[in-house]
Amino acid sequence: MSLLPAAIPVIPATAVPPNTGDGYVAGAYIVFFLIVLVYVAIMALRLTRLERNVRELRTRGEGLRPEEPRAQAQPTRESAQESEQERTTA
Image (tube, rainbow, N blue to C red; front, side, top):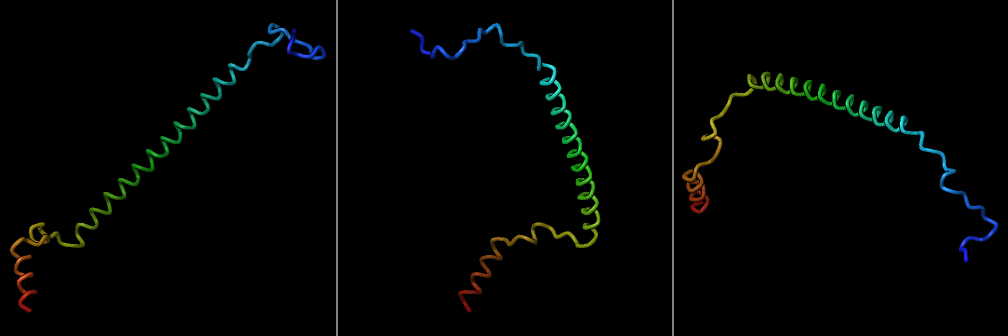
């Protein structure tokens, strides 16, 4: 008993043509790889230019404001206690 109706012809597997698109697949992979390679090269150039600009801006900015020592910029424990005592006495 066949599951297919008698009107549908059955094509044997040997009648299917062999796969001839192997060259196109390899070519597509090569093109994709080249596109990714060009993209990475462009990003590397942009990153190098950006780093150079940041370095230049840092050297320009160093002369504009004086550097403060970190000990003076951060409040010490004693100065915090003094300011708290001033708040409570006022």
